[in-house]
Length: 249
Image (cartoon, rainbow, N blue to C red; front, top):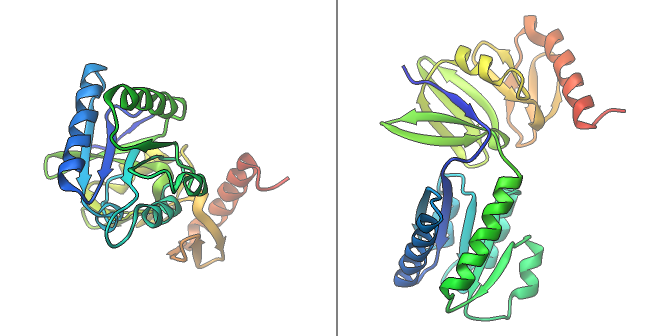
């Protein structure tokens, strides 16, 4: 049996480094790891050689180091798409040119680093970024698949679907599947803004765009079935959630 736990702090920093120059990408990742190890901060660093590869990754990154001048999809376009899916994550541009400094504000970049990036400056930026991640703790479920642990942030989940023994978590980065039980998830997420609207579905009330007696319409355009016997309770829960979130006076 796989067990699901909810955590309120990020125990391991998840970092992405994206640069189409493979050696530079590897060098940056190595320097980041060395600095964080010196600070005794555990981290998981993923390397990507193009923007599309990073955008298609299922991992939810806490900090992203993104080169701007890349072949194909450049870093600025990558950042615009990334921001649509990840509003709160820290985005740090790395470039050999100052040309895009003002454009960086449009995608809420945390920092703009000029190449070559010296260790002292990188350390300062990492320290600031870590303080920011600590000031906005995000809740996540920690799940197991193929003997590996993975964080799924609650804010990134649209809904959860059960298919036999398989749990499909539908989120901003696609669908992540693992073996689990929806009853266990329901107990864990009951006070976290999720509602079990059907025996096979848990929905994140944050993403509810509309509903009727047959289904819940989510902001991503998907529809999830509401069981008849759960409709009245759903109405009460969504009203309570909206009042708490400031949606209804």
